[in-house]
Amino acid sequence: MAFEVTYTDCSAETQQEIQAIIELWNQRSPVYLVNTSGSTGSPKSITLTREQLEASAKRSNSFFNLDENSRVLLPLSPHTIGGKMMIIRALVGNYSIEIREPSSNPIMKLASGSHYSFISLVPYQIKRILEETPENLNRFDYILLGGMGLSSQLEQLLSSVKPAVFIGFGMTETVSHIALREMGNPVYEALEGVELEVFQDGLVISDSKLGIERMQTSDLVNLIDSKQFNWIGRADFVINSGGIKIHPEKLEQTLDEWMETPFIIGGIPHETLGEACVLVVEKALPEEKFKQIQALIREKFGKYAAPKQQVIASILKTGNGKIRRKETLKALLQ
Image 1 (cartoon, helix red, strand yellow):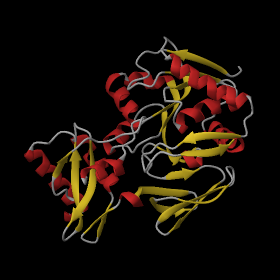
Image 2 (spheres, rainbow, N blue to C red):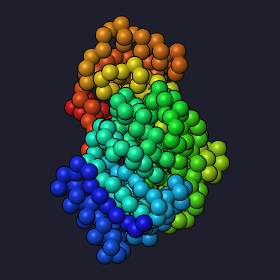
Image 3 (cartoon, rainbow, N blue to C red):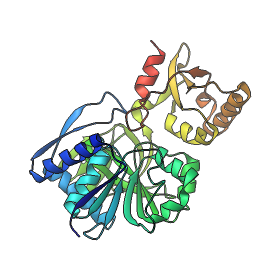
């Protein structure tokens, strides 16, 4: 079976974007311009080489056992590094790929008897699938998640589904994921060629396959060894309240199952604490529920982590659903 692309319920614009990626690859362009997501700062354009894209594709294809006989489903935007790399993996691996317009439940309708080797999703998609058509997950051998953190409740549900579900760690600059962990296991495993260390509290990535010598990140991790780590959060998101460092991602993971409205935990200036922890919500919670949340966080993370107040504001997001945390908090202070 050779590379083949098919389209299901796709707009003309999406088809054109996919074809442009394929044509550029077939023209053997030596460099490719890609855009970062903007979830940790302003979006920017960076240049990746063909050699980097090909090396990343081969490594992922090998890990997920994707070859000429494989068939994968792509329901992500081709604007993202995750979407682009799905197409390039199929080109490099010489297998078929079905493109679907991105939606909250892209596998709502699958052809009778159809089966796929692989699908890549973001958390809001897998959450909707579990609510609406969980039986369709059995149509896949591997599921890869990326984009945003998972709630503890969602991770628990995914640990029990039949396909092997992995979450990737990486960024546009590392050509998508450079480490993976399987649901139910808190430890990320670096892929072939990747070496990890910690410097000035941040994770440093070296990758012989991609030609990355030392890339300093703002990711806070518990480094087990040069190949394994637990992810804690991002240093640039840490809230320093009364000298206590609070990792908002961990609080959000705990609160996710309690919340019916978009939310984040953030820090705002405080006269005596330096920063005060607050709950930013798009719709105010009943006071009794907010008090329950304060008690839960206080018990699990300490008194400084308990949000002092609710702040009503729009939660800004990127095009593929990642929260623009810095911009959201900055807008509160204007």
